[in-house]
Amino acid sequence: MKKGSKTYSILTHKCPRCHTGNLYFTPTLSFRRPFDMPDTCSHCGQRYVLETGFYYGAMFVSYIMTAFLMFSMFAVCKFLLGLDILPSFILVTIVIFSLYIWIFRTSRAIWINFFVKFDKKYV
Image (cartoon, rainbow, N blue to C red):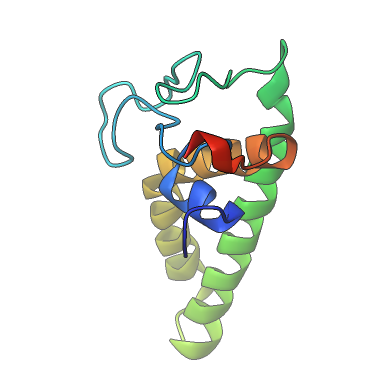
């Protein structure tokens, strides 16, 4: 995973244009301002909100990520670990709630990476 790849920008929550500036003010595991983003990149000046309501599309990405995680974790609990339905459901629910901030931030990072391309001159 190197600078210049979409995977790097998404998983590290970096600016999609320069891969240097942060998409969020605080680290992922911080509960202080977990959803706040700066208006622009501190390194290259890329605007993070391209238009009003830009991140509504990230809700669909978040839905897909959550559904994939829930179904795969439920299958592992049920079929590999042999748990009953209720304990599997409780365990999956706890894990999904624990990952809520990470899912939110990653879905926004995926969404903005659809529209903003990496530019080597800003590195």
